[in-house]
Length: 593
Ligand code: SAT
Ligand code: MN
Image 1 (cartoon, rainbow, N blue to C red):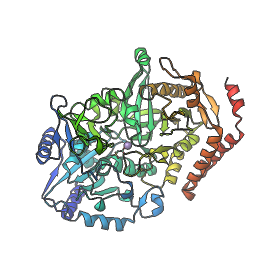
Image 2 (image 1 turned 45 degrees about the vertical axis):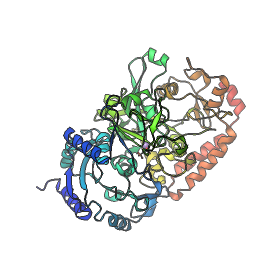
Image 3 (image 1 turned 90 degrees about the vertical axis):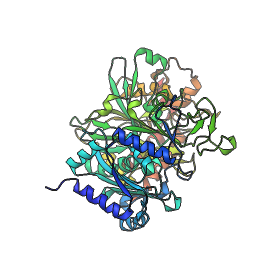
């Protein structure tokens, strides 16, 4: 019988004929291999060693200054029918796309080594996990994939057993923004990426495979591939509730997944366990619940703002064995970014620090580190069956209108709430920062098919026998008239999570409003928190007039997906619009007491 690896060998040969590398290296993921690659990258300047006393085995990579973020306009979904990619994606016809990018790949690895990286997204023995192979000419990509995925021999063994894997071909090319594409071929389960060495463009297991290709597979196979963190909240009785939460890139997913409880909670025995900080694969179990794994094995987190006050767990995680990309350094060669104490000596481009040059660390500078180094890392992240999800939380950056937290009435309403998500754009993608846009389920840049069909897929999970999570929406970013945040955020977000868990268990009280269930002031546990009544009133207020306009706009947004928008979702939007028209706010407030 022909080995299952024949297909892989044939593909590697084919790629080598096209790209003409000097050498081919199959990555086994061993420590020796990693040491040799690190030495090579230190030798040619790809990596710079950081202070070995304060940061053992930590390295800095300075990227090409024109290659620091995802490029949405060059990221394409190439399906036979344009309609299948949808208006949410940039599209190119597959044959044309292959021709265009293969011309770039021709001979591009001359003088370079071609690395073959077999990897597994998810625990190596989990039925929910999926394998892929990335071919790349970037040793920096190899080093990052080693931290972010289960890479090397065990993954290759699983591929040999299953014979199925996602093909990812990557070359840094000339790092020329004019010769750059990130192409997805979901019908072929393949990815081709040329001309960038940046995270989401080049680490093909992450956004390209685990979200764009996986979301396509999930649709036909009945599961969900989502841009969500997974966190376990353990109460003083020792019971852990798992929550999955979607926020757009650089809106605090890593912080929430590693939250440190406020002092009162800590003393009472509350604990927080990190399962994942960016991606969540959820699949219905035999019991009808959704069971989730984190397909990744490490974090690719935003460095600026990470500090002792905002995220002490992340800071502890990245003290050793970490790759830093585009951060600044201090005079004694420690990594530095805005939010840390001390003073930088050299900026992210290696220039002497000069305030006139703008941010010292790049706003999208990153750390890459193994998840197991995190003090709050959950051993359940290795469980083959995953963890059961009780609540799904959607969130965005909304300076006004949207309350601190509310609960959707049911699954269909919850899907509408996720669909309507809005956030400001961030430095994780090139382009203007701070522009409000709809970002349904935080998947706008990552859904590998037509958003209308994706909404329908979400609705389809609600079927007889399903015990689905309750759905919530949070907004930590509401501002007062003075432009300051009304809610302290960070550790105090556990107060909101406690209410969410209470709602899942049927113990927490709420007031019914046209947009869903909102806690009254007395329903949140606020002991030990210094917040005035007026701020709380604003945070929990449902402004009927403002929401009438918002829901009308949601209706126009749903219409932008034409006949792909599920009728049930449009009907739900109508239901909320009518409830708002009927809303008698004074009577509602009086009834709530
Ligand atoms: O796309 S990355 O994974 O590099 C970062 C992000 O936007 O979440
Ligand atoms: Mn992300």
